[in-house]
Structure formats: C-alpha cells, structure tokens
Image 1: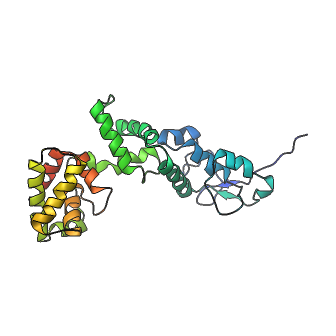
Image 2 (image 1 turned 135 degrees about the horizontal axis):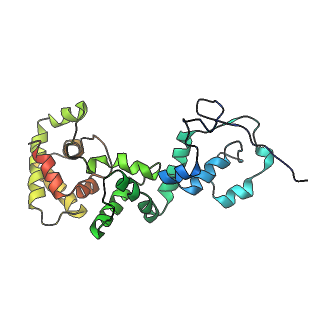
Length: 249
C-alpha cells in the first residue's frame, strides 16, 4: 500500500475555510493564467501552502522544490491563501523574466480594455515593448499594465491638490514655457534628445531637481512620482506632450 498524506486545510484571508463558492479568492488556475500570473510563481506559491522549507528562502525553482520537499515539514496548522504574498511572489518572477516574455503577456489586456487595436503595426509593437519595459519592475501580474499605463491613453490629465500646489509655484510657468519651446523645436524626439532638452531647460531657467523634473512630470501625467521621466515623455509623444503643456500655460 502507498503512504497517504493530507495537507493542512487552506483558509482565505479572513482565516475562514475556503470553498468553491468563496468569492474572495480567484479559484481556478485558468483565471490566474488569463490575468498574467506566471506558472512557476503559482507552483512556488502553492508548494508553500501547508509546507515549509528549511531556512528563510521562499523563492524556488521546480528542481529546488523537488530536492527540498519532505513530508516531515508539512504543517498541521491551516495555511492562509494570501493574495498579497502571491502578488509579491509573481512580481519577483516577472522582474527576473526576459522582457520579451512579459511583452507577450501584456498587449492582450490593453486590447481587451480598448487601449490598443486588435492588429498592431510594427511601430505600435515597438511602442508597446517600450511601455511594458517601463512598468515591468512594478507589475504584479500582466493585467496590471492596464491601470498602470492609464496616463498614456486618457484625453485629460487630472491633478490632485498636491500636484495643483506644485503647478501654482512661481517657477512652474517658467519651466514649462522653456520645456515647450524645446519640444517644438527639437528635430528628433527620442529618449536621448529628451535628456538634452531637459538639460537645456535647466541651463536656460536655472531650475533643476524638483522644480524642473517634478514640474514637467506633473504637467504631463498629473502624478508626483512615476517611472523613468525621459521614457515617459517619449512614449507620450511630441504632440501629446505639447498639447498637455499648452493647456497649463
């Protein structure tokens, strides 16, 4: 006769027994796949429900899990299905993944949300690759590209009180006026020329650091903080950048 083992019960985040009618947890592997969770992250996470390895490490390859697994380390206490931990773990795998793999996962979510056409031109494909690269470090799962990248698709920029206060500073119109001039006259609009543009604005106005970079970021995105500014400006494109700045001058 084979030996039988029973893993501990799995609880939801309210520490109540999970059931197939529990709507607080995504129940099916296919749903995680559709959202853009990586299979190795799901396997790693499930392996730690009711079982613990030696030491503090929690990220393992399949081979490492096989080598370490021991029935003696199965806990009798219930395991909690912690979505925050799963998202952290999946983000860890996404950050380590080849960019091309994440690029393949993200566009269907943007298309489903109506942000991209069903068929992408070569230029659009390159733009999406850069967009996903901008957010790869932040993504907890591929579908998150939709809310994270919202600023690139909305018509109007919205400003919270802190952003409005910054734009009300006396240096803001000076910086934005000089920046707009650079945007309109630069021959090539790319990451390298954008760096040079911002440097030229600094030289012309005498403003640097927060008064320069945060003013430009807030004007274009409505956000006080965000991903790489030069790439953000490039992905917005010259026309959108110029239009958003003009509305504030």
